[in-house]
Length: 188
Image 1: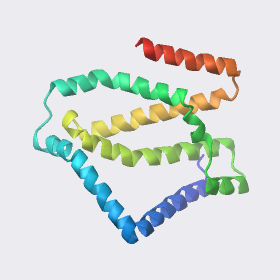
Image 2: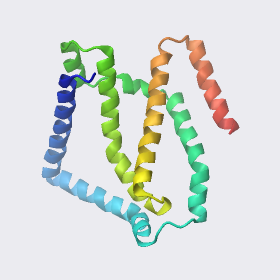
Image 3: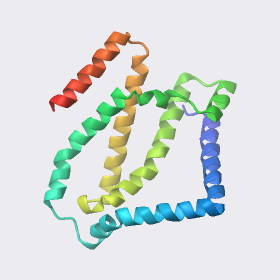
């Protein structure tokens, strides 16, 4: 179902982004900015990394609070993504993608598969870093990584689905859905 041409587009866009990053790092300003960002990240997440690797996972009040608050945080992220109409940007293609897609005979399902796979490829690096930071509060790094990928894809796909169905709905129905989501979040 995935077109080889769209696969090549994904590979070329990733290589282009990597080349752009390397060219930015070669400049003195880019190198200083990268060092400053790495230093700030190490200062910010260093204690969490050390706590996760030095002491084994034990049940602490903070980890229990995190497990109780996590569903509410997920609900808040879903509510914000629906109220802010974040899924609209997921449907839009960037200019290089648009030129490539309009030039080729691609079906709607192939373009949708391309968008979903590019979103998955964007989530994987973040899903590797987030459990590393939260290692002190998780029993398993792999479980944390898998959980982060699944939660992020759930939010992404639900927002994507809302954006796809919103086009065919009456604006009054769309406003009612947004109001119901907001009231359900406030009531919790």
